Amino acid sequence: MKISNIDFGNNLFLAPMAGVSDIGFREQCVKFGADVTVSEMLSARAMLHNPAKTELMTISSPLEKIKVGQIFGHESDVMAKAVSNPLLAHYDIIDINMGCPAPKIVKNGEGSALMKNLPLAREIIESVVKATDRPVSVKFRLGFDKDISCEFGKMCEESGASFVTLHARTTSQGYSGRADYEAIAKLKSILKIPVIANGDIVDQKSYQHALSTGADGVMIGRGAQGRPWIFSEILGKELSDIDKFKVISEHVATLRKHYEESWLALYLRKHFLWYTLGERGGSEKRLQLATSPSVDESLRILAEIFNGK
Ligand SMILES: Cc1cc2nc3c(=O)[nH]c(=O)nc-3n(C[C@H](O)[C@H](O)[C@H](O)COP(=O)(O)O)c2cc1C
Image (tube, rainbow, N blue to C red):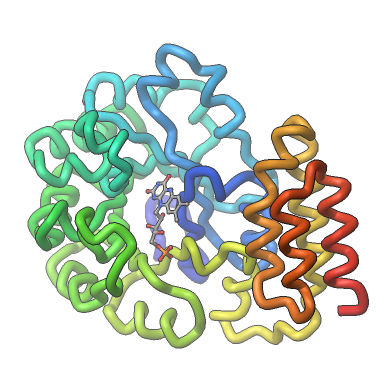
């Protein structure tokens, strides 16, 4: 896939994941083959009134290849202003979040609530497209409680979006059920702009299944948690020699450049638990990781788990 002068390589996207896809994690995903990395969702309004709050969320790594900044909001003028905020200047692409199901977002008429308000969604996309020379994409779900993805996708295309990403579930479904790849195929068949398939891609089989929809690329979220090497895996690369402890150490080292140690001690627990999921003999040590008071202590436990592997 190519848009303007951006070549998307193998068309592999790491999904935006608030509270998960930090700079250290994104770096590891890129090292294992992710072509595109998306920021955690950024509030357009917060950027306008309190940029300091957003600053840490917008730091990028020189290792990242194609960087996408994802914004959310419900006011077209605020969204358009956000795009020219210096904090977003380094992003190659601006993505608009129209798929978030979190109640606190939906109740403000943002995220996937916009799938119930097509005129406003259209106004927002048009305003953002007008405010930047960069490609603008839209990430959305099938619909709020029923599948309107074709109608919504068409509206995105008409409004000037350069591509769309479909997480093939409704908002009401949350994360239950299976992503509907037939809906992705249908959307792909009616749009001229590229479509990125998202939802439940966790291995080579599901990757091939997602590609069989005709989608131009795939986006992986939860399948990369604790397994940033999934991008190599789905490309069929040999994985036996991955040094997991090295991956974790590098992830931590990058975060330590930017975040306070006490915050990291708590924040990293979930990543450590994902990294060690299914490690033989690790269950007792995983319990220790879940309550570890410091990053150093966690690294000591992790060294024991991965010792000799
Ligand atoms: C912890 C978490 C945080 C997420 N945060 C965002 C976000 O900030 N913006 C967004 O568009 N989607 C977000 N999502 C949705 C994912 O990008 C993706 O659409 C969804 O997880 C389905 O893909 P998957 O099956 O590969 O995980 C989040 C998902 C998870 C699990």
